[in-house]
Image (cartoon, rainbow, N blue to C red; front, side, top):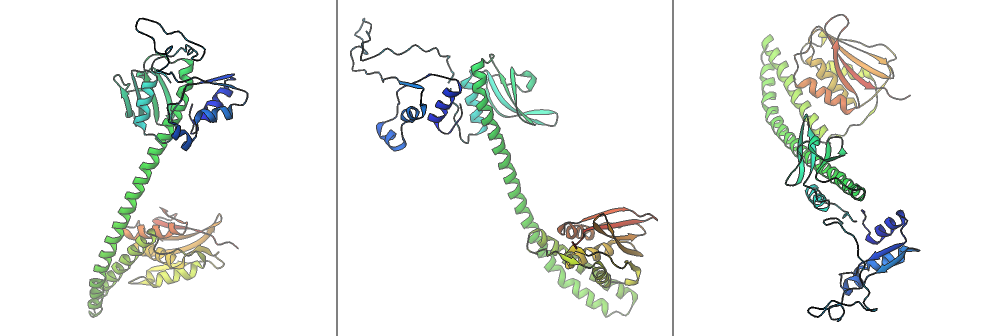
Length: 386
């Protein structure tokens, strides 16, 4: 039996078995402890109802019938009733301790209680089985080597080796299996908590490093852009444009790291796609004329953060090859903003940042071949209600 309340568990088992008597041994606890925590025997008597409860007396070594003289057998008297003869199997007992117990402790206890040669919890890792907790001299290393196996979860089994279990043993095995499953679940949750804590520390370190790098890069990039603006040549214009693009990339990376850390709030509200696309095109360095926006009138509003959406569209446009075309349309209750380029983008952090911004607004960024050739980058956004 398994339970937090010994008296209630005993009476419940007796009722389930339609028992008419409960035979209890004398307590080994002190009178003071019974007064402090309550007597199990008294609780059983109160809960038993019609079930007859008999309590055996404690043997008295000072009593002459209980203390035979040398060479003489004790004669039971009326005040010292004989103890009943109860059949018992060595190494067996009717109760499983409840509460949080470690997997190795449970396996060792189970093997000892049932007198087994070996007991093990096997966990499947790919095609192999690995022991998570084992006890005994002869431990099965695979389920097919065991006398009895019991499934604990999808990837773990309890494997036992030894004499066959009786019907009473199988009934007692059930609470052990329940405890083992709980222990497995506790270990799984503990592993998840440890992994989450490690990930949180890693994210914090990445954010700190990115902030430091961003601060160190901003000043030299601004200096490069100022020096390039002083050069009235095509080269100066190109260098200034590249420096401005790098500044934007650093700013977006910092924003993405802060967004994932929860520092930057995401405020979703109905947003006009046309206004966001126009602002994103205007923010591009170089020749904005190389990007053409084709947006139909009456386009539904999207539920988005305008600043994040502008940054996402600008990052996709900055990564796309020229000339690029931006169009948008409603598709099955959503709104798709499509950037079509003559060839795939070379990749880089720009698209990664754009994807992070879009996902923060419950959207999705995908790439697919364009119908007329080239590559299309689709921002799948939530349509605003109404």
